[in-house]
Image 1: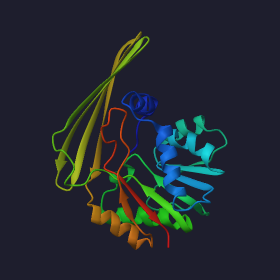
Image 2: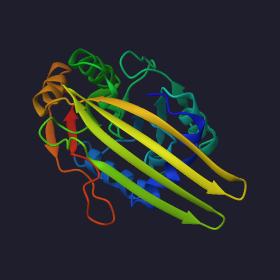
Image 3: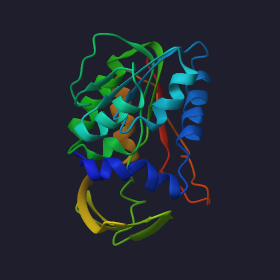
Image 4: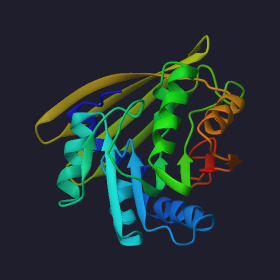
Length: 243
């Protein structure tokens, strides 16, 4: 999905105010990588978004690069991390011409792929950028049995001179989910609103595991991160090691 510039502007602020801790997550990911590859020194963050995780990754790894499809998110990451390569590319078929000790793909980005074939292509492309023994960490979207059809979410963030509301409505459409996000922003200039719709695939655990195995990676499913109030931040994480 191509997040627009308005969404990119508010992305970090809104998620942090909901309890998401990008720094803590990045440290947890680094631990997950080094528990399987102690000497890991390089990392590629696929679908890196605004670069919020990468900011901490640069403190934990000798060499870090990012890949992002959406121009607005990529521009935000580039401004945030001068000197850190942030490549334009599609996770299904990218080729950076080098390998890394670790590859991460967070934010449920793989859920935006339209079919199991596209999921297999993306996992294969990520695995191809790993050294033998390198670690691949992927955060999935919800599974068919964990997705809540008709779920409504709402959040209000207030700061000096500005208030932001974010409301969501999720529905299931066959093997896909439709998530509509609506923002209302009030500041000294008045009100502005915008909305975006995200269509994601409800892949099964078995489909994720098969994609890892087809890419010649081991695979295990581990519990995901939780927000500050204890709510699950994601269904979990798939962690694999390239054979």
